[in-house]
Image (cartoon, rainbow, N blue to C red; front, side, top):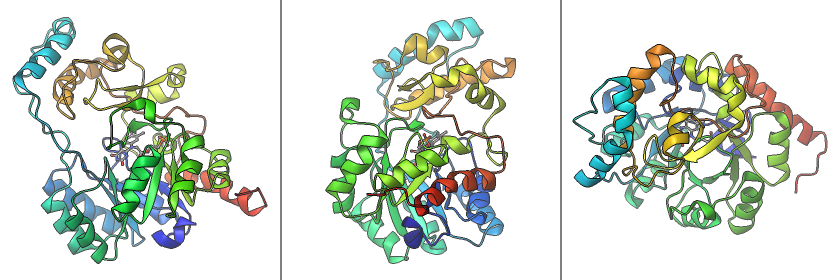
Length: 354
Ligand SMILES: Cc1cc2nc3c(=O)[nH]c(=O)nc-3n(C[C@H](O)[C@H](O)[C@H](O)COP(=O)(O)O)c2cc1C
């Protein structure tokens, strides 16, 4: 199982979740025997150092630092105009002006500063979303003794990652909450659910496969292992944890009846990601042709959020969430981890694995 590679008691990874967690959730998971993850994509270089120091102070166990490696593409003026025009009715309704500046700022790809932090810190694990950084960075990270993981949403991406030196592959099924980690093509029809993806990747590559997407309880963990997964990465399961920074509006949506209706949408950032369906997704999406390239759609939507949220309105809030919220608990992360680990006990009790 993957715990041997990660240096943890359990083969369970708390998915990095930018925007809804900081070092507190990661440390709680590490201290309970799983691999806690710190999402770094939305942290400035200064905040990255602060959060990493906090994580180190909170745990002496192995942890994971997670980065995006998209190639930022600036929106053209025409794209920005088209996007603001799609949103103009909402700005008028809220009585606010659209932002003058829709520059890319919200999410930065992996770069020299992050590499320097890794080389100084030598974390047990670094994971990537949207592919990998250039080969030299991967080599330098591995030279630190750090294990490198990345997400695949198709068999082709898994094979590409294996050829480019990862130590394990996170198989992200369509059920998963948050951004699709895809990087070889943008065609969502090439992607499939966890139940199909894990065994297909297992058959194609010899590296350990970590199942992600739709796993919020012990039965799904047992199913993933039965399919050949060497471990599990769960995100949505931790969204209601007391250590998560998930907003009150987001928590209410996850606990509400509407959580059963999610969609893969590009309206929040410009890149496909799974969210609970709210007004913006319904009226503009789920896949809006006018959305500018990732992540520049986010700035204008953030202005709408800032105006709507204080009045308790989540119409414009990205309500990232996976398709399965059955096992979500308002509990300490350690309890959620142990709950998931129950699926591993079932395995040891003799459920067929291969
Ligand atoms: C709120 C949220 C934010 C996420 N942010 C990230 C991120 O910053 N980096 C990353 O690699 N994956 C991110 N993901 C995707 C997870 O790594 C993982 O694929 C997903 O949570 C698994 O599906 P599940 O949510 O059904 O457990 C995020 C998922 C959620 C729900």
